[in-house]
Length: 323
Image 1 (cartoon, rainbow, N blue to C red):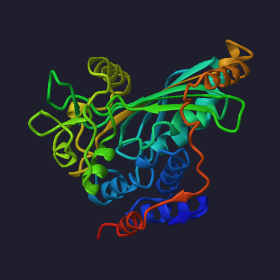
Image 2: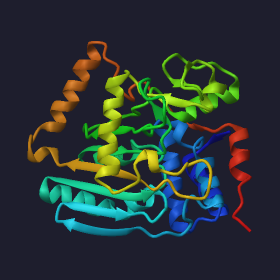
Image 3: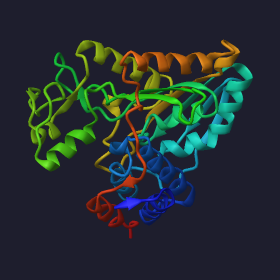
Image 4: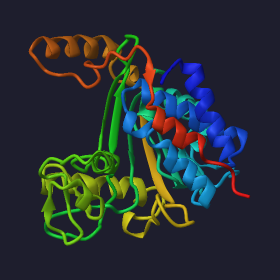
């Protein structure tokens, strides 16, 4: 089905309300879902929404939690999501993050006890639209291993970066520490397709290209040990500096009734306090790199309308609030 932005938002928001969430949560999450679709991150847009809906119905995500915001230091913002969605805590603190970055030149946002963050690029992108250079990291339920361990040790532990360019869209880089996102393996299994080598291991810890076996196994870090090192760095920032669960300790985001309770960590910098012509320099450098054949993240996207599979919409509309 092809959808306009407002129609897509209305469908997502109503589904979230039907799953039992309150108005604030429904609005915050629906905005993030639609934003992910427009950013080309469809795996964490509508395709990811059923995970949230099931989480609301099964109790993994609070349907009414209001984030608690504190300031342990003038340039720091700390949020406890109380088992709710990550997007609402960020929304509640957004203006404060922007104000503090503009005032102090740099600020950090630390959120604990939240469900999976959805599209990680969503957070730095919004801050880049306010003129800030931003880095964001998060961890998740352990579903990634290394060929040395072959046991669940990390989440996909993504990192995202965004910077203002003075153009319609900021520069955004968003990638996992894993070779791919679990949702891509799950979708391949549903379609009966093979997956590339290096994506995952099976339940016995053996490398596999069989998506059906990979769903029962674990993801691998990209680039071997180097990717695993980045996953550990992200873990220290996203769980260590937020007080959230380490990925090994985080309950499943897809089953059970406990919230993963992981963290989101964001650092935002006011670039023109360091380099007054930062935006012009970056814009010119992006053009120069593109002219030399470098593929700039996001530059290949030309999304003019949102397309959501009819089957997925039927699944989304099938969720109802618990009786």
